[in-house]
Image (cartoon, rainbow, N blue to C red; front, side, top):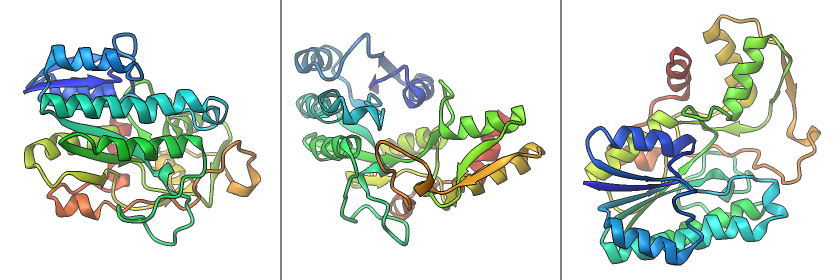
Length: 277
């Protein structure tokens, strides 16, 4: 199987490349190799490579900066996805595209399911939602929503910031009222591989670890696993000035993925494995 990976140098992309290269022919394209917002270049690359599977890990993910750079966010997260979807259709390739919990407004009282109505709070969330819709132009497309991604390289996630603060013994400010369902990179990679093997119905799936937690709860579990005395400073979302309001309750249900035969481990298990390295 020939697998084309865009955004191959990123946190998720590099892990996807490493996993699939063990058993498949992988063409890894970093931004310097292919800017997915360049439609002619995308068409040329897909025509030349003729992939069986196209995995898109490229994205504009600067949530606050997207408010000032809406065109760049839309080009990468929406129009670039449209070009990839068209190319995948022409090549007869399966398209796997990753999205985000930021397509929701965070006003739910229970974990979001895939059929819940989106309501993004800013340009970033809207651009990702448009990308989801445009990905459907591929003959067979899977949109995998991930959340609070951690693991892989570069290690710049919110989880890594918390872990670094605990290790240094520094005060760590963490939200006490923002609820998430984190996604461990390694588990996302395995779920991606399982989707290609099991071939469930195309569509949108929530690809997150099982269980919901506040950032404070996650930090407390991390400190326990590390055997460290952490200086955790609980803060409320309303106390932090942010350019774009984050969805406060953004837990996602992965029940649809489980019913497809792909259960996701609990976030506590994922965090423990990450800390063991």
